[in-house]
Image (cartoon, rainbow, N blue to C red; front, top):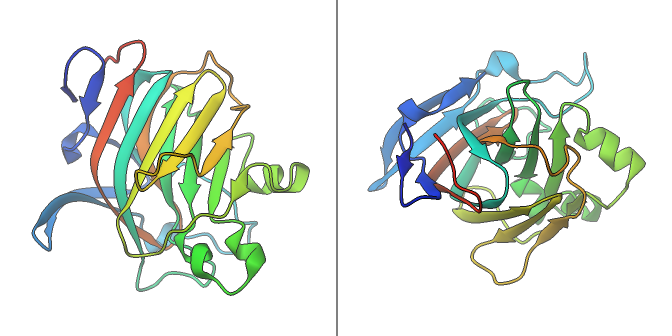
Length: 221
């Protein structure tokens, strides 16, 4: 069971509470802080010589009944020692994860934020809806609509808050009062509901803490 705080808030801070999709998760002590470390095996890294790079479902998640509400978490991502050249420190939040594996996600590419290439900088924050609406399709069909720049960086704590209501999601970074990114048409619709988790991709080692889910309609864990 996830720890329930009141009728509509759960805190997800214990590794044993998460289900794992292609990743490992462990509770660690790091520089005096207790947190969760998430990584994927190098054998799962994508090979751009053999396949097109795409969003996948590598994540640690907790089955909930989340539809509308707020998700808060502190994340810090690193490039693994064996990270491929295209690695960007991919880390984000997956939400409304249903029994068939469909979910919405908003994620970061922290190294893009400080790149010298302006096009890469514009791809710092990304929305995707797995499995039908991955970043490549959205970028091709709706350029600039589902990604944007944000002032972040690899290897530092970043606070993410995602506020979800119906088909709208807004991302707030580092406790700033205005959203850094807005999606007004979540692809799986306002009836979608389900679990919440931390998502990563190739070459990322992610640390996270204080994952808290506040539901407008109550949560069940």
